[in-house]
Amino acid sequence: MKYPGEKFYPEGVRWDEPIKTGLVPALLEQSAREFADRPAIEFRGRQTSYSDLNAKVTEAAAAYLRAGLGRGTTVGIFLGNTPDHPINFFGALKAGARLVHLSPLDGEITLKHKLTDSGTRVVVTSNLASIFPRALAFLEAGIVDRIIVCEDEAWGAAKNALASYDRRPEIVTFADFIKEAQSPATWPALDQDDVALLQYTGGTTGLPKGAMLSHRNLTAAVSIREVWTRPFRAKRSIAERVICALPLFHIYALTLVLMKRLRYGDLISLHQRFDLDEIMRDIEVKRATVFPGVPTMWIAITSLPDLDNRDLSSLVSCGSGGAPLPVEVAAILERKTALRLRSGWGMTETSSPGTTHPSDGPDRPGSIGLMLPGIEIDIVAHDDPHRVLPAGEVGELRIRGPNVTKGYWNRDEDRSEWFLGDRFLTGDIGYMDADGWFYLVDRKKDLIISGGFNVYPQLIEQAIYAHPHVKEVLVIGIPDEYRGEAAKAYITLRPGAAGFDIDELRAFLTGKIGKHELPTALDFIDELPRTNVGKLSRQALRDQLSSHSA
Image 1: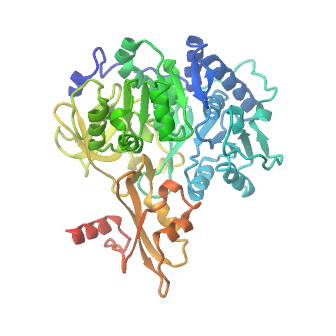
Image 2: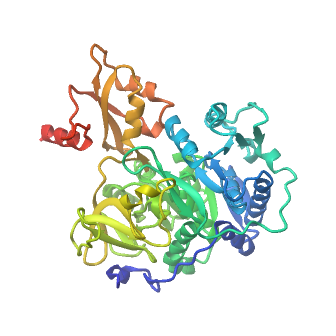
Image 3: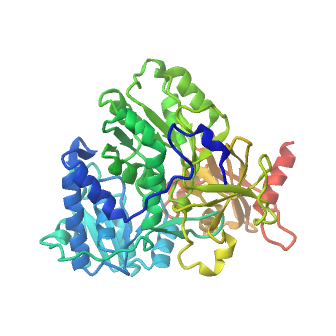
C-alpha cells in the first residue's frame, strides 16, 4: 500500500523503510562502545558516562544471575526517576529476566494485582519514605518473597530517604546484592521474541492487563524513531541535552526518552519529578535542547506570567504526548516563544510509537499526525473490524508493526477481543483524511486521561464501594483545566446513611488508589441509570447529564 502521508515525511525518509530490531541490553552495549566517555545521565548535578553506566548494568546483571533471577523469572521494578532504574532495567534483562513496571502512583489494589497476575516474587525498590513502606507491606502480606533496596542517597543528597529501615533476611540493599558478583563465562542466550517487559495498561474496564512487550517490540520502537529523526540528527551532529521529567515506568519515557536517547549518545538530564523551577533552570541555565513532556507540563510553562521574557531559545525540539494536547496551549507557546509544540499518538501496546508530526511540516490543527515508518494504521468499521473504511469515514483505528504487542499476559482466551491476526484494535475512534493525516474524534468513553496517565473508572468505583455509606457508584471523566480530565463520582447512598463531601471521600480513598486517580468532584444521585439488562451504565449517565445540561 502506498501511504499518501509519505509526501510530508522528512527528506529522505520512507514509510516502508526496514525497521531494525534486536535485544534491549545490546542497545546500551553498542552505545557504550560508540560513546564511552560521553555523559549518559545527569542526576542531582552528577554525571554518569556511557562506559560507567554499562559497567554498572553488567555488574547488576551478574548479581541477578547469581541470585537465580534469569530466564523464566519475573522482577518488579518499583522505582521513581533515578539512575537505579536504567541500571536494574538493563541489568535484569541482560540476565534474561522478565520485568514488570510498578508505578509509585498506583494504589494498593492495582499494585497487588500487577504482582500476583505477573507472578512477581522479587521487587527492586528504593529506601524513599514514599515507596519503601509500600513494598514492605507486600513482603509482610506474603505477596513477594524478596525486596532489593536501592539506597537513594548513593546518588547525592536525598530529601526523603529513610535513615533506617527493616533489615530482615528477605531484604537486601542493592549494594550488598551486587557485592562481588562475577560475570559468567557466557551470558544467557536471549531471543528477540522473549517477553522483556509486562507493561500493565487497563483499557477501559476492570483491572490492568499486562501488555507483553518483547525485545523486538522495544527495540523496534527505538528504530522507528531513529529512522524518522535521521535527517534532523544528521544536521545537528551533536549530543543533545534531553530533559526527562516524565516517569521512567511509563512507556512514553521508557522507549522515547531513555532507550532512544541512550541509543543516540545524548545526555539525559534526569529529574525525579516535574518541578517547574528546576525545569526552567535546565533550559535557561544549562541550555537543554530537547524537552518531551505531557500537556500538564506545557500548561504549567505556558501559564508562567513572565513567559514572554524567559529564554527558551536553546530548545530545538519539544513534544507532547500521553494525552491530547489542547490546541490553545501549543498556540500560546508558539506566540510567546516561537517554539512549535507538536504532539502525536501512541499506546502502551505499541511500545509508544504510532503517529507524529514532522517538525517542519504543515500545521494540521487537531490532527494526531502521520503514521510513522514501519507502522500501518487503517480505519475499520465499528460493526465489522474486517472492513476497512475509505479516507474521511469515521471508525476504529487498527494498527500493526514490529513495535506492537503480541497480546496480554494470561489473556490468550480473550485475544479475539483486541486482535485480528497481527492487527491490534486500539479502541480509539477517528479517521484518516485524503492526505494521510489522522484525527481522533472519540475514544472508548470510560477511560479517563488525567495529566497524561490512564485512570480507570472501575478501579476507583471498587475502592469507593468499600465506604460503608455507599450503595452504588459510577465514575466518569469531567473536564479539568490543568489535567485535561479528572474523575467525578456519582453515588447513591444506603438507606439512612449520611452524605459526605469530596474532601472526606478523597481522605477515605487515599492509599487505596493512586493520587492521580482520586476524584475531584462528587454528586449524590437518587438513582443511577442502567442498561436494559440491569447493569449500571456510564454511557447512560453521560447521556442523562448531557440531556439535563441541554
